[in-house]
Image: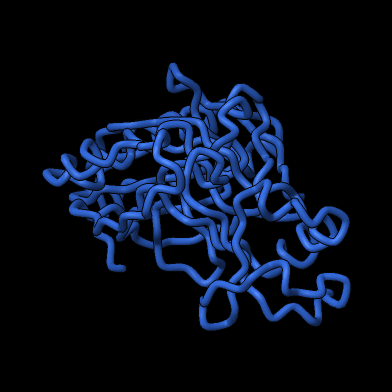
Length: 269
């Protein structure tokens, strides 16, 4: 993506001002890298709409040009399930999504639970599919014979109020099976260090982001709007009407509510 040079924004000026007085060599290195990163972000934001997720601060900022239009807390990956840095575009969202559980999680985490408790699948509204996405009767499977190298199934959690993805999922092209999504565990947003996921990014304010992406089509969201009183509501995929570039980066420097520089721990070190 070709970017034009632009005038330094307030983040770059703040970082440069801090760099002028900072003596600590470790913080100076963070500041120097951040000055470069935010200069790049300034150029990217010019005339564009951008979603920025910073992993160490577990926060999201959304911009229309240089204007910040939305900010929120997010939950990102644990050290052993790290959220990947990337540049992409959010092109679609799904209301009342299914959760297709990754093979790694299905075999390493859920399979032992299924083998111990045959009600686990039913209790968690999880269905079993074959390689062609056809439903399979879970009671017909010899679960004791399965393991990580012998698991010819796909696990899919039904949509609804107990779905781990919540009411909204946001799709963007990437090779890691990552997405932004709502969550059924909202109490975790009260925790300062929010590193709990398997790599995907859980959103504090998914509806507000959806309204930005849907633009004039927001009536679709208001019409279907989180019908959790309906058992297993059907997923509805909607194309994003507004183009938002997604940046997921790893910056040890971010800004507080007053716009002051804050340093964060290197959580994935």
